[in-house]
Length: 253
Image (cartoon, rainbow, N blue to C red; front, side, top):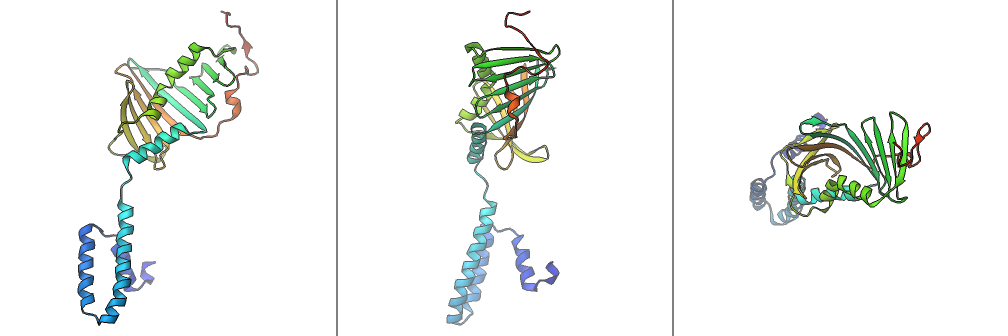
């Protein structure tokens, strides 16, 4: 396309790719003033207005493009996504004492319903609105429903302590060096230490969290793949035993 442009326009396009630092703008302004001094007074005045407006606009546009996003604002966007979501999906890989534990898949919605699938063996569905919890043992096709008592609520709260730690963090999250590509998307990272946890969090350009690393010490760590607002069928959070599952009482062996 450039071959069809006039020489002057090609020169302007090429200039857009050069450095527009403060010294470059000052040099351009100095050259402009020298050329204006050689023009007749009335012509100089008219051209001065047009040229100075164009020069100021060009420098402003380049400056805005080069202006870095505030680290604090970017991390606040991440916190907002983790506080104000419709659904949140996590795939959690974890280790304890250097031994890999079963992968856990967690899905939750805005209403507080949570489903955790531990490997292929067990699923636990919690419904705070109905004050009920359902446990599914997939191997023997057994199901057990029970009230959501205080102990179960506290256990759920403990498991999601990292989420509250990120939401409530008010310190300065430290930017991590470099970038990480997650599911083909470039992300930037932050590190924070709070509530006894070391958390590293990676998010895309829109502030959507893509991965979270948790380290509660040398003995236990978690790596989470994160998806915000991915559609989840409401049946995932049903506390009714699925077809083919035998319901057990709480006192059953």
